[in-house]
Amino acid sequence: METLDRETVKKLFDHYRKHRDGIRNKPEMASICLICGSIHILPKADDDRKLFCRSCGFAFYRYSCSVCGKTIDGRDPKNQACGECGLRVCSCGACDCPSRGDKN
Ligand SMILES: [Zn+2]
Ligand SMILES: [Zn+2]
Ligand SMILES: [Zn+2]
Image 1: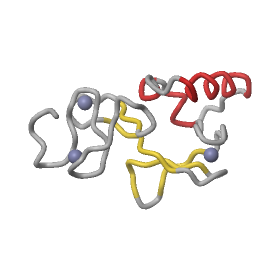
Image 2: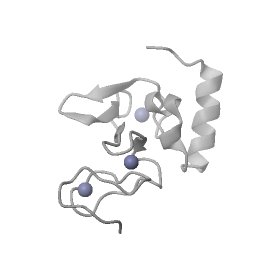
Image 3: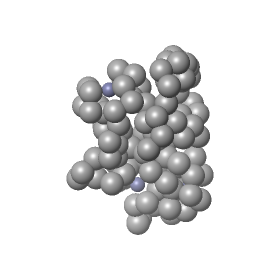
Image 4: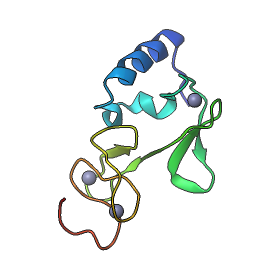
């Protein structure tokens, strides 16, 4: 796993704290906690769509859309929670839950 230098982490952290739109498109944000700024992010053992921060315990969704392959990040305002299954909806409008066929 590549490590991010402190300055980069601080810049990304400061930026995305204020501008959450775009987190999903930034690969580095998979390893930065938006709550405490830690880079000790690990996959969650009981949920392969989630990551969690080892420092503060905050867990968030980050996984690839099964339809278009784009990254979905629960901290990004463009990836709202799905009202049906509780997962996050991709910016393409797709969600993994079986019943969801149309947008909205
Ligand atoms: Zn944290
Ligand atoms: Zn998608
Ligand atoms: Zn759903």
